[in-house]
Length: 59
Image (cartoon, rainbow, N blue to C red; front, side, top):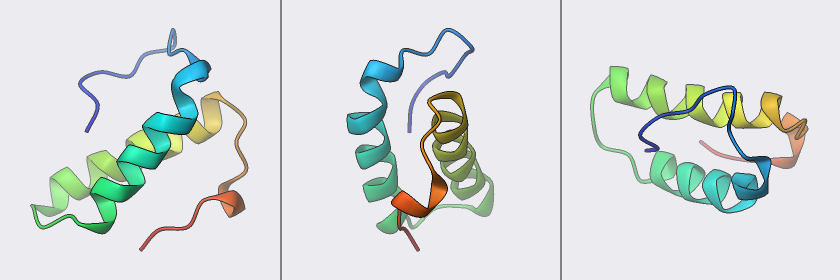
């Protein structure tokens, strides 16, 4: 999970960050709150960096 995502997020990191977040989500064993945070981070990066949702598969 990333520490902090803000409007100043650098989309140059999107590919590796999304890969890591999706991998973490697929192996996730924690609380529903933590799972929601991971999903929110994925969606934030997708929206901020204009990455179509259909290009990423998880769950």
